[in-house]
Amino acid sequence: MDLTKLSKTELLVKCEELGIQKCTSKNKAELIELINKNANITVQNELIIESCHVDADGDLDEDDEDEHSNHDTKHLREILSNIIKKFPSEIKTKIDNINKASVTSAIPCTTKRVSQNSRLYVPYSLVRKNNLTLEQLNTHLKGVCIGIPYDVYEEIRDKAHRDELDEYFMQNIGSNNIISCIIIIMKTEGYSGSGEQRKQLARLTEEAKKQNWSPVTRKENIKNKNSGNDKWDGHYYYNICGGEQECLKSWTGKEPQIFTTNKNFMSSEKIILDNKACLIYSLLHVHDISSMFKLEDVSKYLKELEEYLKQTFYNGTSCFELIMKLRTISKDGQLVSPILCKKISIEDFRVVNQLNISHNEAVCKNKIYFCENNKKMLSDYRPGNLFWDFHSANMRQQDETIEEYWISYEQASKLRDSIY
Image (cartoon, rainbow, N blue to C red; front, side, top):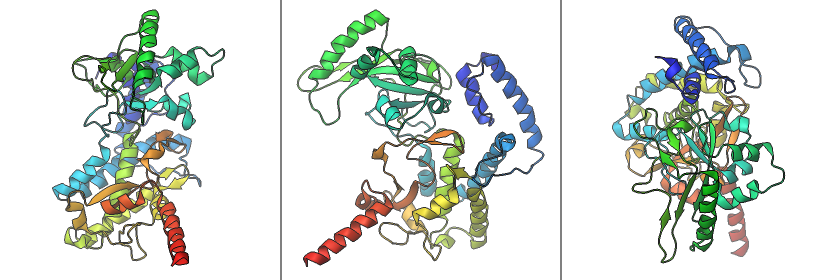
């Protein structure tokens, strides 16, 4: 591969694949040098498995971090592959869907059938709500696009003094950098009218002329189209509908597919694999697993996964501890619904819509965390937040955590007893 033909964004993605970290500030020549050097090391490491050390708080020793990540990711991929290939097609589909990004009209130019670590769209309000920094946003190497509502843009534009974040956003509207921005006008949730949006569009039209802005479009006939902000052009997007007035859209024809929603996103292959490891580890605890696997194989897989999960940390807590805190595995070592307190069968995985991947902290909370152990942003799809449960249980749980659900249940029971 001729690395000189790759963009900086593509080189950074290559660095991530090789486990090279802390390189976003380097130029193309420095990135190419790092990749070539690391590629040679990786070949050697495939022949020699060296030991690595984990600090008491779960952080990798800095000298061993890249090498450990490469080896462990490869080893985990092999373990999961050996397990998944023995499942029937219905269960394989459920596991494959762990890494399928949601399609939603709530964001501009939503993608379909892409990986959850693709180019990411994050509303400006969520950046502020979650106190995300430029450094943290820059860790999503396949690109982040910040959507700024036009009225918010006007407020930022007219400020006498801007903070570092707002200054960066103003300078990177439609840029090719890892963090880019677009100006948006969309229907406000819970409001049926569009009068205010149409007024904003009139002002946006004048601003676009002054700034020489153009509508957002996707570049055609390009490779890796869902990675990097250099694969699309433009500065603004609008989709205004309401009442009996004409719908106004910034594009013609079919809406381009460019951005992946911040809901369920996963910033790296490692996070994707770790989520799969947590869910498959739990799945192997179904009470009737022997109908599908030999028990000696189950014991072997559980041992391998448990060893990995105990050594894999997210914000100071191992994946194994995070699973145990969910209390989805009973004292008898069997997978149960933490809401219905009912055993889950391997056959439940084969029934359409019988089981969900449920969340402890609900998707609607719109929380994005930054993991210091892995130096990546984490969404609702993170180890320790996902578990298998019945669809009916998911409906009962609503937006509460498991713990909040049981507190509410106990309070309701006491209230009922006091009345009757």
